[in-house]
Length: 481
Ligand code: UDX
Ligand code: UDX
Ligand code: ADP
Image (cartoon, rainbow, N blue to C red; front, side, top):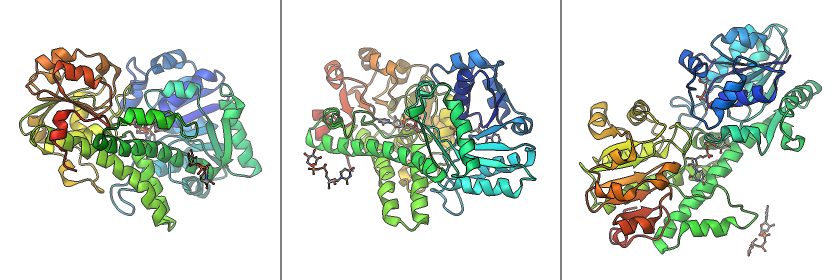
């Protein structure tokens, strides 16, 4: 029986291993983590992450061939294949701060593998890492090997949160990179055999190590670039009277461009896009390619611009002041169907509104009040965010921020509603009921294009929707750039 151990029971490690266990009953899969509460969560009825369909997969395999444990050393020592799926945040201090990946967790995982291994192992990079990390890891392992042989593979994960199980069941592709030696090729084949249990052979791509590592960064950079492109066009639509949904539809009908991932929004978030692009930018700078670095950096700049543009629109529409006004924020997660708030645009938008002294009431179906407070109090690394996006003190936060149990409570006595996540339930709210309980004029700022502006205008709202022709009210109150 092949034994797999995955270090890191997070958004990537947890779902990926659960699906491998489900599809490969003959393989024993153990997910280990240094965090006791995380592992306890995976062993409980309430999993530590919200992901549609995941409960079902875990219920079928847990205790059969899927295990969650904090006994890191024992399980890593026993495994034939070790996946490493630990966090790789952006460095916040020292060399490359604000851009380079922080590989502290990765390095300590590698040293631990070297310490506890008594048999040959295939070590698989699962978390996104800078190109050439495999080489560094290989050096750590080989220099501490005590006779154990290692093969390093790069097998980047392409799942998106909210659709993780679906993405793992039917991936567009599985990418496996390895050394171009007989031992390297044998290791690639061994991992290919695992995926081949359910993924069609033509969807399993094998490459050299560096191509696999770079493909992951490039894919995320291309995806994020599409969003920044459509968001840049959304600003021009508002200025000219074009409708971004119509433009995106027409553009996406060109088969060379394609229709997906062209929804204008208040900005992209999530743990990958910004981090991976920053990483790419840093790598380009290190290799003496400043023009290429500048090109990709612009994708992040437009994303930051989109968030400030949204805040400016809110403030300028409401007579240039939101001080003391209650604003309902619907949605805090970085996208629908997840409770994850890493890099969510809601953090920057809320901090912008709080900086203008608004009082905000937040409702999100999956994000807890504690998470919201943690995020808004966090001193986010300020690599080039404007000053007004700086977080407030804990005392001001307590005065200015509340979390509501539902959308109606959030909107009661509010002057405005801001929609920041595209949760399906926001499409079918009783907006008349909300309107009746709000101050007038009542505003809606839709950062995700989930509501029908015409219907809401009929109710009496002043409506702003990203990239849509402007309401007459807004034309009279031009947003400051
Ligand atoms: C992303 C990649 O899609 C995935 O392949 C990779 O492995 C990890 O990073 P994820 O961050 O989970 O996945 O979500 P994704 O669906 O890509 O959305 C990222 C952000 O872009 C979200 O904030 C989302 O709301 C936003 N987005 C997405 C848009 O604003 N418009 C779109 O058209 C699509
Ligand atoms: C383009 C558009 O494709 C067409 O829809 C529009 O109506 C007019 O402009 P055209 O300029 O004739 O058409 O050719 P196209 O095939 O788009 O190529 C443009 C340039 O891009 C060429 O120099 C081509 O060699 C180059 N190219 C294209 C690349 O370098 N790489 C590619 O992957 C594709
Ligand atoms: P991702 O979104 O990439 O899955 P997460 O932050 O959700 O990232 O998960 C990474 C997990 O890795 C965390 O639960 C963290 O506790 C765990 N981790 C980090 N370093 C180690 C280590 N050396 N050994 C075991 N687990 C680790």
